Image (cartoon, rainbow, N blue to C red; front, side):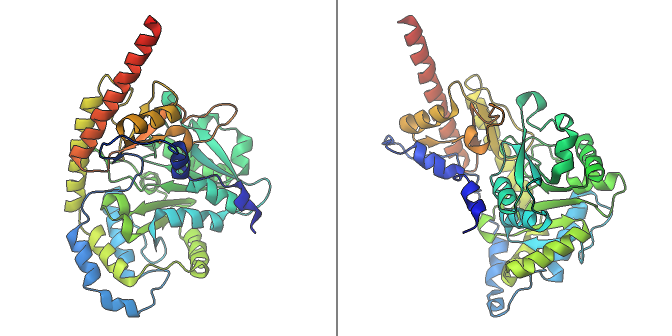
Length: 405
């Protein structure tokens, strides 16, 4: 067996199940705020595009995807990120969602050695760690602290770490905090990639879930274009229809950027055998070509964030993120204890922040935080917030009684 499999940790939701083992939840309707699975209605026109093209089940899809899909993706990305061009033939590849692509990408670009590093934010999407380990590299975790707006402090990374870095994963807007990396930070990373010869993989799957219609989150290719780097050298981005269009089951996204890197990535994927079904490609064209449903989606998230934050005001240390559909809330007790107690008392599930991060030099930047995914319908999210408030009040009352005693 692959020895690197022994390095993998249990997925966060496996840890969560273990945390809740032995608890009998109260007779309340369960509310899950733990998993970032969009629950809004999928666009009907996308479903129709699939059913209208079921005859394509008789055709093998190609790994590179049909030209019409790559062109639709290129046009969307150029509009959204104000790019000067994105060659649909060489700078775009459709993928089966960002999870699959992020993992496979590391297998392509990493030259395995005991010295190889993959740098990653901490907390992080666990695929980054698994992809690094199974590619024969070691993950190097960069803490996302509140004092830095939950963005890694790239200025404190040593030149020795950058020298060993082969791949830098960034996530903007971030999971779990929703923090957006700034223009100056992105352009500084591009300079560092040139100086130290590493690749930047920007996970931007939450880029279309934001609050200010006049100020959408910046992307890595956009940062490239603004400095005239239209070949996007060393830079690739990962996008998905899962969050943008409420289509997690379609397994459709794309990778775009440096043509030389994508050429090798296509070679890897051809052997890996991960081509998107043609009917899904045609449905994806419909989704990337429409913005009305995306705007309506953002409106619904705005409504939920406003209601939930109003309920939690003065209850928990939490605020509206830059983007995404997560709340990253500081807990008054240990995050695992908070999550376990909330489930036992209120039948509400949240994810402990320490399950999304790793301890480095005695510090776990996810500890004493929980992630809440506001993916359910508005009333269910509001009810979840009301139950969280009741639970926090019970904690405060218990603390007061304990002090009085």
